[in-house]
Image 1 (tube, helix red, strand yellow):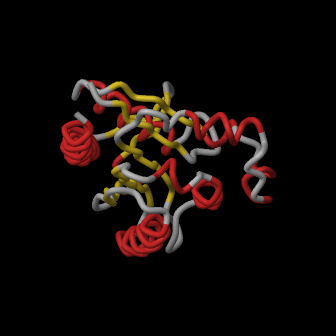
Image 2 (cartoon, one colour; image 1 turned 60 degrees about the vertical axis):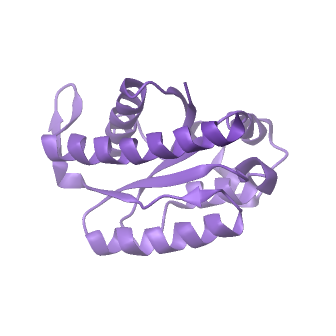
Amino acid sequence: MSTIVLLSSSPLRPSRLEAITTQTCRTLSDFGHRVRTIYLRDVPHSALMAGNDAHPRVRSTHRYLDGAETLVAVTPTYHLTASATLLGWLDLVPRATLTGLAVQAISIGTARSHAAGMDATLAAKLRRRAPASVLPGCFVDQEWLTDRADGWVPNELLTTRIAAAASAVSGAAAARTALAS
């Protein structure tokens, strides 16, 4: 069983991003992975924006990556980049902690072109941080979620897209596990 860290930059609960994080966690668990989820909303944004890697909450999130094979970041992309909290957090992760991990971004937005920009920005930032591989990003249109009284509900297109992303993550995690043994 591989360990995958799911990093959610959702600032609110409930939200579309939260629904995608939940769907991704459920799908990765169905693939047989142990999933640890980091919610960046629980980390003081002042610490992330100030680059305070000594803050106890920031340091505790880095420990989630111990023993993980893959990091999956869920982020909004309503501009040509990932969320500031995600980028701030990545800047604070020690380079050695990311070394050897496979990383994938799942993004939500309204325009596919935003995801292409985010993919390029995030991939470039990650490559400088030395993960083993940066998997192709997965874009999810915000219209693929329906607002209901019990929260945001994903449609079939979204669940299919997340399942495809989870399959790629599973392959990368299995390859990493095989190399380690």
